[in-house]
Structure formats: C-alpha cells, structure tokens
Image 1 (tube, rainbow, N blue to C red):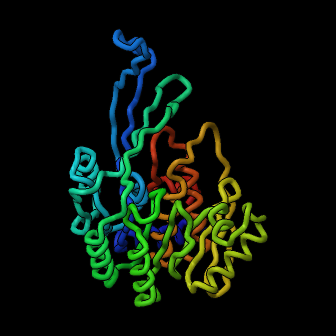
Image 2: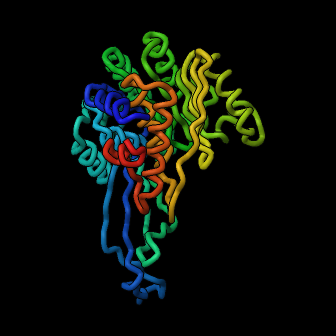
Image 3: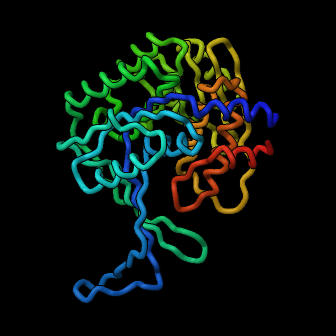
Length: 338
C-alpha cells in the first residue's frame, strides 16, 4: 500500500459513524509481585500480594478501544453493565474514551457486569497470567433489555456507516446478542444493503442472519458441519460461496496463516500474517482485525487494503504483553512502512 493510499483511507476515519453492539466486559488485571509472597497464618496457604490493579474495557470494549485508537469519529456503544462496582469502573472507562457515546448503554439492576479478572505474576520473563476469575450472567437476558437494544439499533443504523455485533458469552441468550437481537440485525442489514453489518460470535455463527461474517477457521468448519478446519484452498472456496449466498462479506482469520476475505461479487483475497518477533500474546488480536476491517471498509478501502491493515494491526497487538492491546494509525504506518 502506498503512503498516499494509506493517508486517503485513514484520513477518512474521523468522519465515520460506527455502532458497536455486544457484550462489553471489564478486563481487570491484578499485578502480583512474587517477591512479596507471604504465608497465611490462618490457612498456611501462599498469599499473593497485588501491587497494582488496572482495568480497561474488554469484550466488545476491546473492539471499541481499537476503533478509538484509529481515530474513528463517532462510536455508539450499545450494551449494558450491572449496577455494581465493576459496572461503575466499566462505564467510567468507556465514558473517558474520545468519540464514544453512551446514550444507548444501559445499567441493568438485575444483571452482573461481565468481568474477566486476570491475575498476572510479574517477574523477569514478562507477565505470566494465572487462572482467570470470571463473573458472568447465567440466566436468560430479560426481554425488556432486548427491546431497548433493538430500538437503539434501528434508530442508530439510519445514520451509521457500519454496525458491529460481538457475541462474547458462552451460553446462548445470556448476553446482548440474543436470538431476537440477531433477527433485528438481519432486518437492519436488509433495510440498509450498502452498510457494513459485521457479526462475530465465540459460539459460532450458526443460526445468524445474512450479514457480514467474521470468524476463525475452526468456527467456519463448525458452521459448515465439518470436524476439522479445512485446508487453505477449501477455506477460500467456502468463504467465497458463503459471501455469495449471504450477499455480504466473509472474513476468516487463520492465525499464523493470515486472513481470507471474500465479497459477494466473487472477489477473494488472502493476506499472509506478518512475521512475529520474540514473545507474543494473542489475546485481542481478533478484535483488532474486526475494528480495522470495519474502519477501512467504511472508509472506502478495497478488500485487500482492509485485510492488509487488519494484519498489520494484529501483528502490533500480539506483541503487547499482559494487556488486551490496540493499534493506532501511527503504529500501522510504521509497521506497513507507509
């Protein structure tokens, strides 16, 4: 990509309006100093002393962090937090981000804030993540909340350049992107055929409407009823057929093999991953791909240009250890040599 083209694409980011619907989490990091370990008098167990606590938005908030880092001008967060301490931290962190609008982000008194609590052992070889402590909701999402999110989507989509939906929960219909909300996404995609509507789900996209799909190779295999991720040639053929059938883009991330993208008109691209150096942490790489694809395509990039930017962002993020990272336009420029 030439420097001029890079500037043309990223220069439009400030005028973009993106709606981000999904499971906003709180990522809470507990940094433990092993040199300060003690033994409990009462139990005889090791006491891990936390010397620093830091929190940041996770889940859909990670995509939001990346969109903010790119300088996307208007970002609407559609989701919820609980009426609890974690919710206070999450809402405060989201409100501090430039360009983020919280009018459609609810505080739910009957839901807990989705929280990933990540103890990190800080020593000479870098942060070592210990067993994570998660806080989730296990019962079905109330219909009243679904009604509010659907109304928000319909209102915001009328003036948006793109809509992203991230389903982060492990149990169906316990988060934001429930079956009813997915149906509304399909209706919005039909009503706005030229707008990018992109879905991503850790449960897989089986049963999702015909919108843009972003998934990894294992999720593609599961969607197609296969036992193992297919070979690259098969992935390319399947992505192209799925894009044609849905009438929307299909993106398949392939870890160290890069990413495949397909458009309904038959356009197919494979962009290899950039080489890594030293220790890496893959947490958040997929979300950086989602954010950069959305921003680039919304700004008029070709599919290949968008995939190149996404691969550069993922490469930057995996080298950020002990955090769920993001990539700025300046970092992308340096990584791509633009």
